[in-house]
Length: 330
Image (spheres, rainbow, N blue to C red):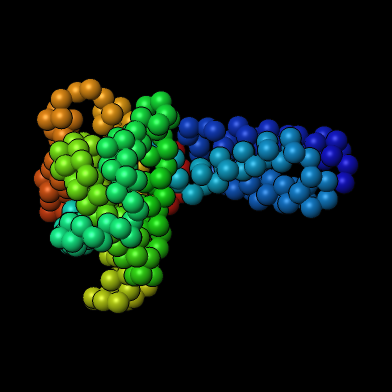
């Protein structure tokens, strides 16, 4: 294929496609023309990719075709209005519908963590399996604290954000299995219980709670929400209710995506707290209060805002909350 010849013969059509795809308002005939140009452009792009893949031409055509597709399907993109609606309606509704799952996951996680710590603390000889007394003391008094200052605050906060996002992704993405969220949550509860027991035994409870609570309260809340959202999808597959199994899973799955997007924000805030507040010289009561305030805000958002929008008929399902959008002229 001669790229130059193709450019010369299709230049007018591609220019018109570019202009129409970005026009704010179109008449009925212009929409019809855009649909024709879109099909022609898609065929041209397929030919270029198959016979003479010119990266510049592929980039330009792909960009214009994506814009045209968005205009034809009525997809508005991430506008300020759509983001505002997501934050005011979809997210709180999805969280409120999942509130009892969040409470249940929280209770079980804390129970497993507490039992693990109690099991070790009740018999100090069990610590021998974890390391020598000098190693455990060094961890409790030095390594546990140094962990929060190992990089610059920004670098450490970013790494924590990524690590916690990965845990949340496992819970959310593997929710349909019903096993992966339980496994991930159990492993983390057990690990936290072991750390708590070691630090409390060798450095005292003040050492543990003063460094865990500031960021740990909102951070764990995000993990609990992720686990609850994932398990709710699995439950909808087992008990679909009056809907078909496919409809139930699809609806809770879309709500799960809504929640997952919200967790990005909460985990970012937790990462900031862990990177900048936890290792800071602020009084312990101030640091813990900041973490508790963030968590209280989350639950207030769920129970107050969520209750109101659910009462208004919203569910957190992106499809039913937004309605079906069809191409329109104008």
